[in-house]
Image 1 (tube, rainbow, N blue to C red):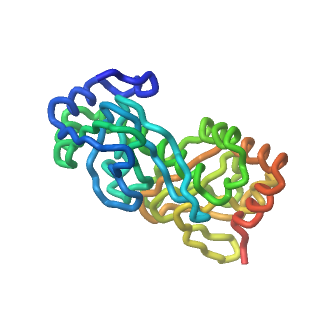
Image 2: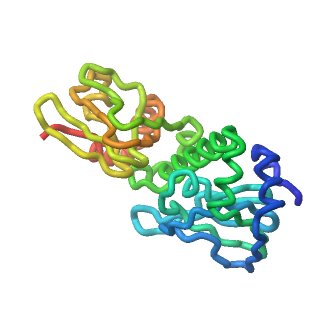
Length: 253
């Protein structure tokens, strides 16, 4: 199998496991390997051909998130977190894909903590990138600037009961809820339960003021993070983004 330079970061041990254990599947152009919102936890590796990863935008339109090339793996988000598939994967030319069942993949990572950490990191970063590519808040941001936001983005995982921030804090990071449950409480008694894709930034934080909110995880929570400076720069230069941002900031009633 000829490995694309784009997929050179995939550990050789993981590729070797695919080649020795996985089931090879062949798809013609247009063949659907995965559907958005499915619950299949199989792990896949592309051996030949090219695949398109696409996701439904909040507006209802479909957007191509990325293209996969030989040697790349996919399905790691669903395998690690047991969530619905966040995107569809379709062959754009005749392709061969290797599939590991959830049981086979679990057996492999039992032998190596490093492989699990790799899959978790890869999957969560892709999840963040997918969110920024399709969330309505960023719909009017240029592809070039979306790429910059993705480049600077990261994620945090909070165990149940941990605080993201407290009253009196100054926020230098922009937060968006990726998964899990997070509760926000204002000092005046207003309480909000945040939903997937929701901005977690109080309105006063955008102006650099100390926040009057406490944000705490109710369950294990994954949060997308972007440096606040990047958001403020886009707000300054993009009136359409600034208007949408104003609408999603958290405000006390």
